[in-house]
Image (cartoon, rainbow, N blue to C red; front, side, top):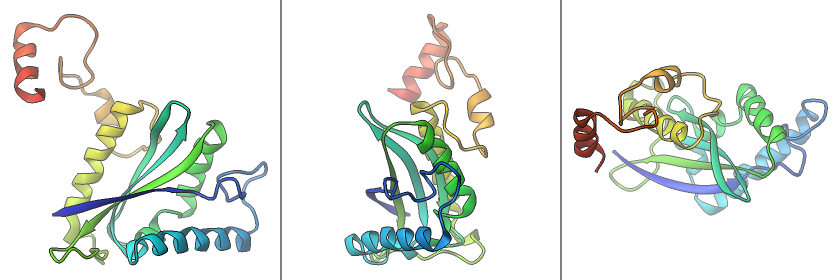
Length: 186
């Protein structure tokens, strides 16, 4: 299973897409035009990417760098259909309205052996690797940002404690924990 990373692509934040606004959603016609412009840019850069499947990362770029805020997957439908569903737009808006910076999307597209974009699976069962990748990206995102807004798959990652490995507490490690840490993380 091969994946390629594409982006970052700036979301049409300044233009007033749902991500920014004082009273909720702008007129649907305006929003759809802006989303179509966004996907046109994606397609101009990488033909076929909008119809591909894989994972995506919503982040905010600010003076101190980029921070991930939401990680999702598109396995049963394309990036184009998955990334801007109503619930995703509200999540992005909640973050973008409370943070200073530029909202971005990265796409981690699943590729075929012929180096073409994989297409979504009707059942999603054909792309179990996308589920795995999403979980791992969420784990990495949590390491960078404990306030990541993903709800699914984060509770255990936040609650599990293994000295020196998962959510380590400050202080000196017991020799056994240090030994395991050295084996797994160095």
